[in-house]
Amino acid sequence: MNLVSSWARLVRTATFRLAAGFAALFSVSIIAVSSIVYVAMTRYSDQQIDLSISAEVKTIRDSLAGASAPEIVKAINDRLTDIDPDYFYYALQDSDGGVLAGNLRPLPAITGWADIPLKTIDGDGYRERHTIRGLGVDLTPGLHLFIGRDTHDLDDLQEGITRFFLAGAAATVLLALASGLVLSARFLRRVEAVNIAARHIMDGHLDERVPSRGKADEFDRLAANLNAMLDRIQQLMQGLHQVSSDIAHDLRTPLSHMRQRLELARLKAASAAEYDAAVERAVADIDGILGVFAALLRIAQIEAGARREGFAPIDLSGVFETIIDTYGPVADDSGHRLTGTVAPGQRIRGDRQLLTQMLANLVENTIRHTPPGTGITVSLAPGPGGPLGQVRDTGPGIPEAAQQKVFQRFFRLDASRMTPGSGLGLSLVAAVAQLHEIRLALSDNCPGLAVVLDFGEAARPVPAVKPGMDGRRPHPVADRPSAIDSTPVPIRRP
Image (cartoon, rainbow, N blue to C red; front, side, top):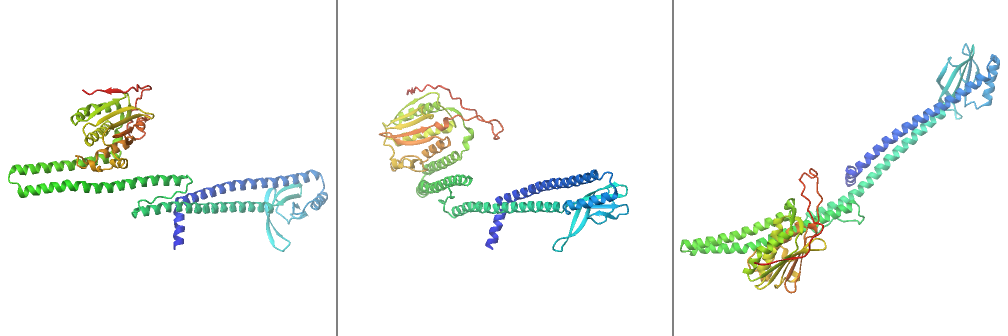
């Protein structure tokens, strides 16, 4: 049963159907070519027979012109002894139909070309039916001559050609079907490897991957793409699990506090003012929780790439200048020193609002988590591959082991757990950077932290797309000047 099922699967594969289709096409082609060759060779053989018979008739006519009947009879009999009796057949008949000379039985008076059946007996006593192809002419009044040739050799040739082409067609079909089965078996083995990996993944083994043979063929390329997709899915699943755990952990505390305050207000509040105060604190807690969910939804929207459709050329220098101007007074109020240098004319393609939010989160995070007196520097300058932005501070910095973890949702250092915030600010920064293909790196500022933003990929010009090619209107191509003044311009604080 398993063998029958395996054969049935092989026959149902697209590879086998393709091979069967080619086999049918080749068979039709062979039949067409065989038919043409068969007809051409048959016509050529018939022509050769007719030419030899015509030449023999002309030779006898020319040699016996004016001869008497006895001379003609003697010449025909002599002709039979001079040539192979099986090569030509003669029948010299009088006006009554009697055979005067020749090696054929009496025939009806035939003028012109005709095919006559002939029965012969071979050396083993078998009777064979042959066909004589011949030409009948009148030599003299009262004498009629028919000269013909046996077409047995021609029939054998035609049968041989037919058998040869039929064998070739059969061999072609068998080879095509065998090739189809072999290719189908190989195809099924590769597909079955993908199916096995998919079943293991569905069973919960998210680290399972599609095997690759290292041949760099289309299956290996498909396996590489599938494995990259599975890596991304595994990361997303791990992130989803982590987010679920973090949400449950981080929201449990404010919800518990809110419930305790409301319970205390219900049991101990003695006036409307105390009830109002408890409600206001509960509303504030709820607003904080809603803010967390809003941030999560915004990060999810950014990671899904929904905002990429709105990318347009923007003045990145203007974005940095806006952040420096906006957060300068905020830093002063908190006891920090914010300075900045911005090279003019730095342009990229992107979403201005998201990039502004990304820089704002970096600066706010620095102000919130560094002590008063910390110096903060925001800069933008041309880099080897495009604009290079930096946010540096002279605070306590982040331990190297935790530098990549700070971009995870809800992750907070121990020293920051008592400060306001949800732990989502740098997650949004990472999401915006990924959306814009910005290389984001953290390093030690000695002392403090340095956040480096490489806008090289986002600065590359995008070719214009003709309307209608992808169903959307094309974005304008960024106008990048050929020469940019790279001299940093200091931003003075008022």
